[in-house]
Image 1 (cartoon, one colour):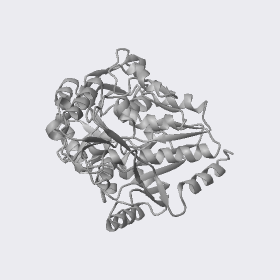
Image 2 (image 1 turned 30 degrees about the horizontal axis):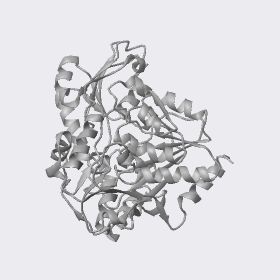
Image 3 (image 1 turned 135 degrees about the vertical axis):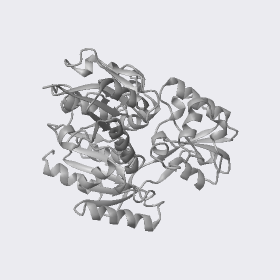
Image 4 (image 1 turned 90 degrees about the horizontal axis):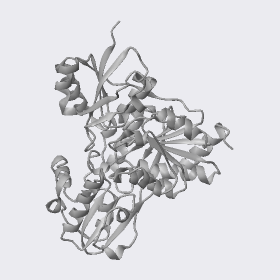
Length: 443
């Protein structure tokens, strides 16, 4: 019997994981190519032999997704696997039509074929969209567990953007210097730096079977920190899912965010302090409709400014978390909210954009008042630096979760905006995690 030929369509995350856990040693299939989308600069690489296994001694080539028609013509695959996240349902429908018009079936792989099991209890934090507040929720969850006297190890959804994937197979982060060791992008640093500063060991990479087995050796409990709105790579014993009343209805209209919502044990309605009451209620009703058994926790993400005097009444550019305001489709983030509260005059950054930063604005046309902290590699970080340097403003509002001034030279006065999760009412996450720890006899 001949092998079924497959092309995996991804964005350097879910695609690699699905290959590793289902296709790598599966003699019924032949993965003839990966395609890459969504993230700049990941479309011309190789999935190396060190990761692809004995069935693929030469590795597997990764192509830009726009070359899919050529690849179908060349390789004649029977299936294409759609394996990336934060996609509106109409986008998924268009991909189905495109792939079917070329000939192959299009497949969406579910939890049964892609989730690994851990020997330790797993608490997962996921979301229905990028930018709902996973980062501050994950920090809150890990801090609660630390305060209980436990040793959580955090595993982050992959962001392997280095041209050489062999350097990223299983990464362990304990010190800030480890981010330099692994040539981390701004997006990676935004997730890793706050966790490292908390004293929590963090893992990420490409091979999540290898990662979980290493993490289990030093953890009382595993915490999964999701990416975009993807569902976990590990079977969770407790799944906490974020929804965003600033984008009501998105919890039921984006793939695979609704999958998370339907599986959730706990749903956190975040940002209630800045959202309209009607939108909060709409989200609450949608949650209750599809997952009536979920515990609902209301929460705020209040922002604090490091030095308000730097931006009060000044002309400013606001730099925001990149994924939140690009494919997350939010027109603004915490930095913008803080600048408005400070009475700053927010300046349109687009006229000052250079290189790939300018390209980003052309791609994400909803962005007018914020500058996404794009930094997929040293060249793009330099372009971000040049954009900020060109800006005709008095000061810079840094709304990213990291100290951006450690990575790029910001010559103008600048101040950071911070935000943390703050639950409202009972039960809160501490109550829920205390019951979880007791149930699993972790103390």
